[in-house]
Image 1 (spheres, helix red, strand yellow):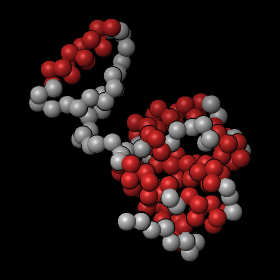
Image 2 (spheres, rainbow, N blue to C red; image 1 turned 60 degrees about the vertical axis):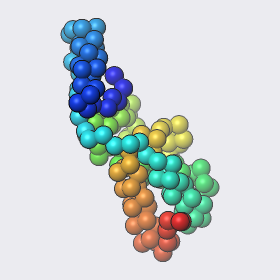
Image 3 (tube, rainbow, N blue to C red; image 1 turned 45 degrees about the vertical axis):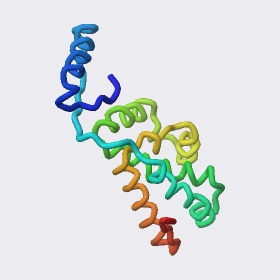
Amino acid sequence: MKDVQLSITTIKDVVKRMYALFTSDPKAKFRLTLTKWSSKRSIPANKAYQAWYPLMADQLAMTIPECTCYVKLNFGLPILLSDEYLNDLIGDSLRDKGFFELSYEARINHMVKMPVTRLFDTPMHKRLRDDLQNHFGAMGLNLDYRK
């Protein structure tokens, strides 16, 4: 079942969907996670640090695609894995495939095709922006929001 907004007016529909899910496979077990509804990330949430990639790449002596993979592996993936639900889904899968035993270069190369920030919600994007500002700020690079 995809994300469904649950409110007093949609509760009957949600119960119907859950009932259909349970009756389609009576032996299956499901995880239900209820969180306060928040809108998906806005484009500006993503644009702020996308504009920083040329600066970060210069600082690290990398190309922009290399820097993107570096950020995904060293900042984005730990944020995803700190989320209990996403750690169960993604972390377990990566562990089963031996991802964490791969060389650093192989893990970086794997980031080209792995969705990381696409899976973020707004608080995760904020954490990524803060982490990037702190990390690169310590290197003397001022990453600021453009208004």
